[in-house]
Length: 71
Picture 1 (tube, rainbow, N blue to C red):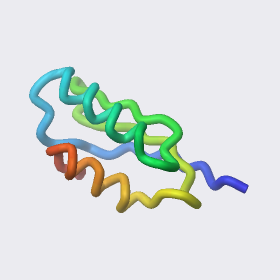
Picture 2: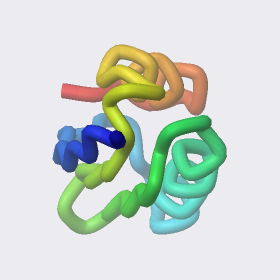
Picture 3: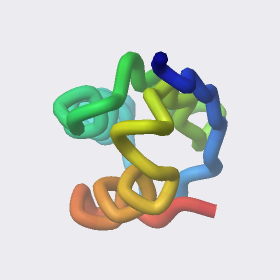
Picture 4: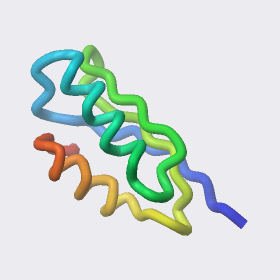
């Protein structure tokens, strides 16, 4: 049974809406992430994920690999 979690993280390093689009795509490709919506205007990302398959730390690591910093 999946343990679905939704988390909103602040993100530093967005320069434009293309940055937030790229982060959304990168996070969406992580196994266990159901949906990722990054917002340039709000400087955050909302991630819905299966906590049995991916951890918050895995998501934070992918944000860092994408060139951004999660609050």
